[in-house]
Length: 191
Image (cartoon, rainbow, N blue to C red; front, top):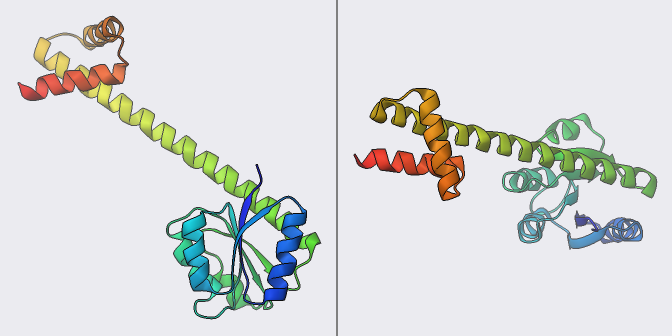
């Protein structure tokens, strides 16, 4: 699947050159903008896989636009500028800025930056999914433990007996242990 890139550059010739490099190398340029306000609008509408954005632009600069975009989207951002001043590099160290390229941008330095940015974004997404899955497992486990506690308290049974009752009920009614725990909690909340 071709990676979708939003290109934001106020100089149309540079934008055309970068767009050509990207498309010639199998990337899909899904949107182009010449200022930061349009960049924010397109980023939220198109949800690209990567954003390549100039820092110095009219209306809203790339640093401010990047901060706004990063507040709602996890798309990595490559900043491009004619300035290699330390202040811009320091300001670009925000959540989703993964690379900083100085103009003139060549195919030799753009393509590796794009590949690294996309690879890092994929790794980050995978880690976030793993954390979410782990948190969901913990919540399920807490629910089962809570239900066992209610059975122990209300039926005067041991922890093992409470677990076995839940397991037997789950198997008999073809429910997950989580669904059974929810039923136990609902039953004992009413009484």
